[in-house]
Length: 190
Image 1 (cartoon, rainbow, N blue to C red):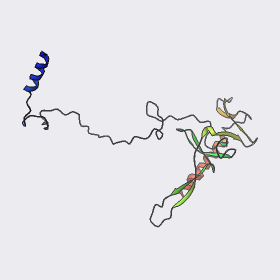
Image 2 (tube, rainbow, N blue to C red):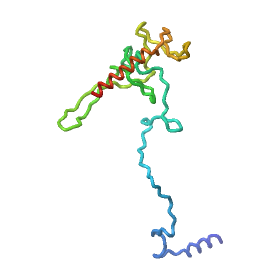
Image 3 (spheres, helix red, strand yellow):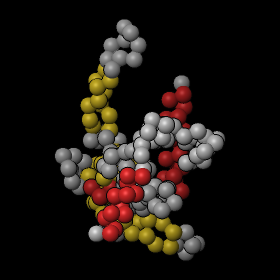
Image 4 (cartoon, rainbow, N blue to C red):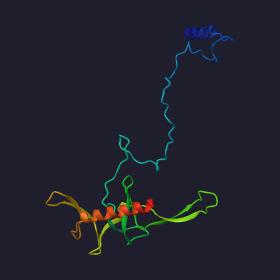
């Protein structure tokens, strides 16, 4: 009971008048700043949705998956609506483990006109396929196979087809792939 009386007397002693500080701004000399202004203000970064984000390692670099196929490999599609078709890998995306195969999985893209008077277009583009839906293919023996790794006598580590034993990684193949790349770059530049 005594504590209640002491509490009521303390409330009565607090009288709010128009000259009190409640509801008014503090002058900078009275109140220290709550935060330190920085010279380099960071730009506002829009947060991506969970399904749009690329999974990252703790050092914020994207996780790059190991792929059993490389650019220039001949592969057979083993699932999806293009099942059974054979094509060549033109591009790989290691962050989501998908591949683009030449003239496969074509999707329709509607392009708006960029300039006034220019008509819009309907384009066919090659969409990526997950790498687990393709298998390496041997043109000589017409068979799809898993990939294996072995070390040659000279210490070179190469990929080979498990069913046939055919070595996939060869110097002639890489020369052919690099020449094709140069041709496409020259054609794109002109």
